[in-house]
Amino acid sequence: MALDQTGIIPARQEDPTRWRELSRVPRGPRARFGASIAEALFRSATRDLPIRVDYSDTASVADAASPRMVLHRPDHFFARLAAGGLIGFGESYMAGDWSSPDLTDVLTVLAGRIDTLVPAPLHRLRRVFLPRVPHSQYGAPGDARANIAHHYDLSNEFFSLFLDDSMTYSSALFTGADATPTWQDLGEAQQRKIDRLLDGAAVAAGTRLLEIGTGWGELAIRAAQRGARVHTITLSREQQLLARNRIAAAGLSSEVTVALCDYRDVRGTYDAIVSVEMIEAVGHRYLPTYLYTLDRLLADDGRIALQAITMPDHRMRATRNTYTWIHKYIFPGGFLPSVDLLEQIVASRTGLRVVDRYSFGSHYAHTLRLWLQRFTSRTSSAEALGFDEIFRRMWGFYLAYSQAGFASGYLDVHQFVLDRASGDGHHDAG
Image 1: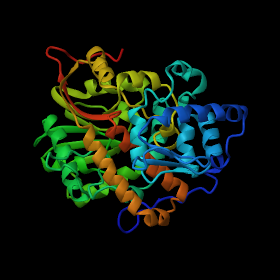
Image 2: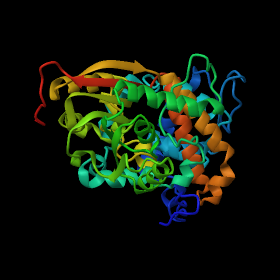
Image 3: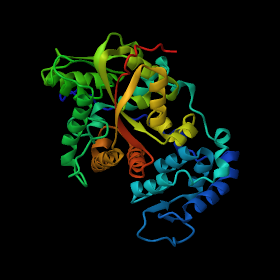
Image 4: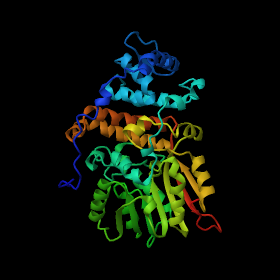
């Protein structure tokens, strides 16, 4: 696809048949017989929550000041919930079966009670009733590029609708003075995040730096401005093109190479390795391979800085094989590790050690709030790019859903610094 005069790749037009499945309300036996059960469970789960659910058949008795969820088509909502669980919950929002003037607040309440929304005796039925992650989303080399393209190749112009000028698509790091950060604070907060990672990896003049996950090139630019020689890799063709353009515009093409490459295919040795929120795309089956690869590529006196989204260990273990709404519509193959799992694999499968860990999940909630506000304010621009109403509802739900995860504490984000454990060499992949 050709670049336009701004250097941004135009968005593809939406396939008019894309939402055909969504337009059909489930009518099978599971939906027919399960809808009444789903309704009973939903009413029971939400009865004592600090949210207001408005049904078509009854006036709400909840506090009118509470976040409000409106069921426009309750029958459709409960049929989708019965047929698809949490996938059906997200699809029913996309289809317009329910809405909320306080979407993030509603989702934050639900995320904060995620362990108790479904009665404990039903948890053991997860394997029977919930779909499993398809093999194509395990993270194998042959599938990884398609999984990445599904998300990141929507178009660079689309992401520019809600990201700041640095095109940084990961949590910013605000200061204590930014109690309620504004859009004007975001660019500086993204630079602060990047600089903390580069400092953690000891990136300086002459450093041979490997970046796994280019994004749109901002970290590579800032590292090269320090005098580092940067090799950055991505599986997104659109990111590669725009990152190269931005790097060239900064006059740094001779210091930075941007390769379309799987992390498993990288060769050589590097003084520093930095990877920002790429580990979530690896998949839990390939997490040992990913961390071993970092071990293999790092010089003996080198350092690694990682930024990773995490979830509680018990939830990670319960859900790691479950196919979710996020997998189906947003991040095929995505997997959020726990801190315990990461540190366990580092200790048992590599010659590395974690020397620093910093948590700043509340900063991600602020980052996502600003992205969502920006995206919502640019509805007409998204429509002009060819992204229809259902897509825009989907993307808004994803941003609000993510913000709710961090605001409730269900999700966290960490920066890790690793180096070579004393006296240890490179470990085998084993």
